[in-house]
Image (cartoon, helix red, strand yellow):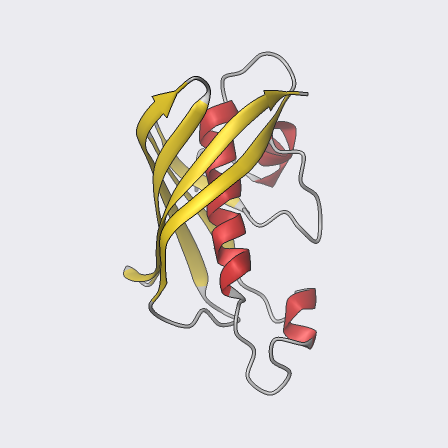
Length: 142
């Protein structure tokens, strides 16, 4: 059992179905978060990506990593904020993510400057890296 469920996440993130891509948080401290998404064949992207061999689109894995970063950065804020995805560097896709997989997101803060954060982002399935990137995320008062 994690430390945050979907109800807790929806109190932090403004995203909703079908674009909420984090199901739970396993662990979190001031600098790092580990969260997950259960990949289901019932998700709308699999109707077209691809009907005979469904693969989670890489752009949605990156979005899930960015949403996980938003949870980390906005968890303790008392006022309303919106996470803003500002940039991506060094993105690599190493393995397919398919329905039935449990996608684990790991985010670590590398540096912070004037409300903008550089983050190390890794997605894994069965402890194998499927995606890695460096993300830039900001938070804006909502």
